Image 1 (cartoon, rainbow, N blue to C red):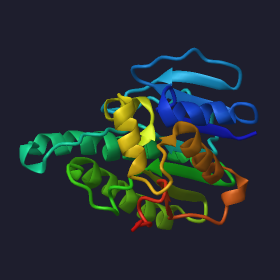
Image 2 (image 1 turned 60 degrees about the vertical axis):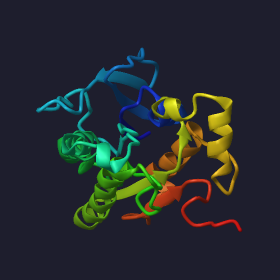
Image 3 (image 1 turned 45 degrees about the vertical axis):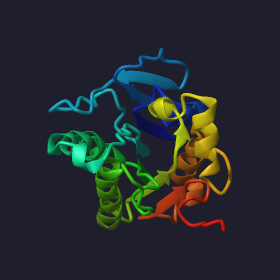
Length: 231
């Protein structure tokens, strides 16, 4: 039974991942705004990744895996975005992840097979209009993934998942009508929107034993959007 920490485990992909793990592993999940009552094998703790100092004392001495789920989707024309908005987004997506990894790193080093999973976006490798904020910060996450994978090997593996649009609360404004859902689905070769459960399944694979020879990789779980062009 592994000890797994999920930062942002109360909604979306983080919640789906926690639910997929609790039958066989101990999950320590955090929430900021969306509190959830702890259950067997899954305890929830309040944590704001924007705080200057992070209190992760609720974690056991050994943590086998860390997943960082907080993120944002700010889609606006580049010319209308103040520089301060780029900094705010970077602080949540990148600095928050850095602080969490640094805080939990001593616990991860006590595991025989430590694993870190981060999240990017299909928009980093596939240029898309109005995605300059999210592409900038998530591009940094992809660079961080590879740098940490090199630095922490062979003790800790580090990988990243780059989804396309996924049906989570974070994407509510983009999927608020049937028309929007259909339009977004049709942009993907698989003609569907990704689900939190599908992304959680990929994250779970990267956390556990079947992926112990995989590190420093960016996995595009995106319905084919990043690699397929249909004529």
